[in-house]
Image (cartoon, rainbow, N blue to C red; front, side, top):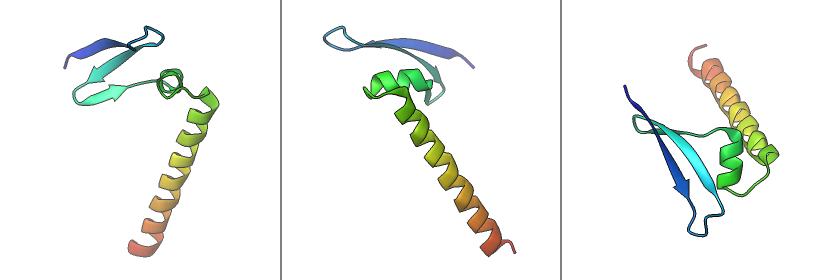
Length: 68
């Protein structure tokens, strides 16, 4: 498997983000996502936290209601 890294630069040369590709997946760390979306890193962290909580609750619900 070949991991490819590409560099994206905005037209005004203000932002440069190096991203790593793995098959059809693009990997970014929280700092890269914050830069990409022009947000503070804490906003990205909070969104990731809420996503993991949502998934955890959803899995718990499925286990309680369908595998009980």
